[in-house]
Every structure is written in C-alpha cells, then in structure tokens.
Amino acid sequence: MADPSLAVADPAPASAPNILALAETYPACFDGENPRPLKLGIHHDLMAAGFEKAAVKRTLARYCNRPRYRKALRAGAIRIDLQGQPAGVVTAAEAETARADLAAWTARQPERVEPEDVCEGSWLGYF
Image (cartoon, rainbow, N blue to C red; front, side, top):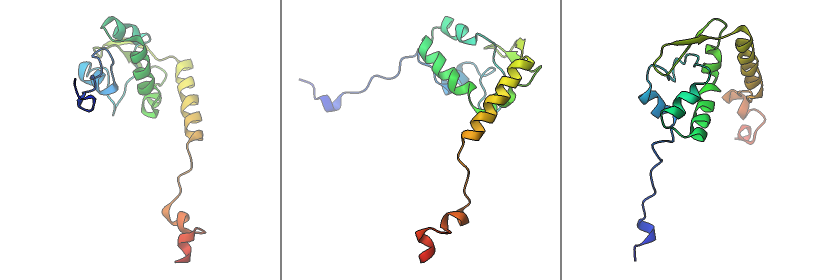
C-alpha cells in the first residue's frame, strides 16, 4: 500500500491558464506592465485554442480588472487580438465605463497612512 503522505498533487491541467501562461503563449497580446485593450470576445479565441471556459473567464477578469488595464481603455485606442493585431477600437462609452470603474475601485481603497501617523496616539508613543 502506498504511503498517502508521499502522494504528489496533480499539476494544474494545461487547459487552466493563468496570466503568466497567457503572456508566454501570446506575448504580443498580454503584457502585465503595459497592457493594451483586448479584442471584444477574445475569450472565445482562447476557448477555441483549448482552454477551459471557467479558467479563461477567471484569468481574463483578473487581467482586465487591474487599474493599468482600465487606464489603457481610452476612447479610440486600438483593441488587439491574440497575435497583437488590430481588432477593433475602444468606444467613448467603453472608455467612460472603464474610467468610472477605476474611480470606484480607487474610492474603495483604504487611505494610506504615513508611518509617523501610525505612531501618534498609539501605544508606541508611550515608549
């Protein structure tokens, strides 16, 4: 009988992409530092390439909901396909939605407290 503590977990299936895997597979499309607007319906292209629907949607949601990506959605910006080729244009309405989403995200972020402020009034000020 095999020792269960020696069991090796199955690696993630090849059909479960993450942002890094997509960037390696489609470097002209996915760039974490300088994202460009993606083609509408690009998830269909990824599923046609063999990736699982749920994993594609989850990965694209993480990529597209980042502030850097939202900032890239400016009216008139060129959308790209998996090979980095033009595949549409960001409309004014899409740009406005992205701007509003970014503003809402920014408003939800906690205020950053400077280190000096943390010590004032706290128990650390007693020492």
